[in-house]
Length: 355
Ligand SMILES: Cc1ncc(COP(=O)(O)O)c(C=O)c1O
Image (cartoon, rainbow, N blue to C red; front, side, top):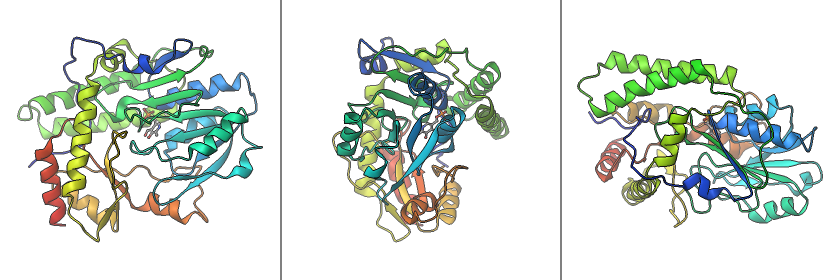
């Protein structure tokens, strides 16, 4: 059976640097590579605290625990903003007098946030930090007025450490620590097995691959406990600097377009972003499933490993936020990444048709 999804393998790198992230960093700015996305967020938040020691941040109610945790760890006071069912933030102008910083994110590559509101933030000197973990490859994935750009490549390719942080003007002041050796070694070991299994599926026993999945999950749990302003290892920086991002963008857009054109209509699910504009490079093909548990199980039985981003995190209170609660309860993402071709997307569509 075809297997779709799961951890990315390492791949052979091309000979030439892509100059992608350094191209996004202005000459007067600073680009740093971090162990993970949360380390990158934490670096930017600690950096901002040098100018605002008691910061109040406006943060998304629909997000990952790993996004909010650095704010809590850095001692920020939090005000949450709501969402429509289209994953568009609902910003409230009455907070403008209260906040020092706003965190924004283009979900799954689609950056639908209200730029007029962000202009108002800029006019008032409110710092904008954009988490580009999902939108880093979209042409409109970075709001031009933001102060910090942070993110993680771990969602896009096989890399042990994937965090990056850009300060558009000036240098980061906090000290950057070496990567956490135990976490890094777990990632390296786990991804090496996944790479073997991807390249030579017949030579890696299922039990060995399952052990590697467990090791990688343990690495995630460890990261939640130990993360700090940890830098990247040089091997991961090389992967990010040499990866063929043009091919990545092309393939993901092609796969997403294929899914939009061929995904069977059904009452069992709806497509969250039903149009692919020229700017967007999608991270996943994301749906709302009426009965997500059953749907996910069915996909899994057919070798399609879909993910639900994210469970409701510890600081999230959904009372009175029915649309946002709907997102958390129904969202499910199917892989459409550069490992796969139209043939794989056609397989996914056939499986969906029989649900
Ligand atoms: C939007 C967003 N930002 C940051 C992170 C954290 O990235 P990492 O897992 O590399 O720390 C995640 C992870 O899920 C994420 O989805």
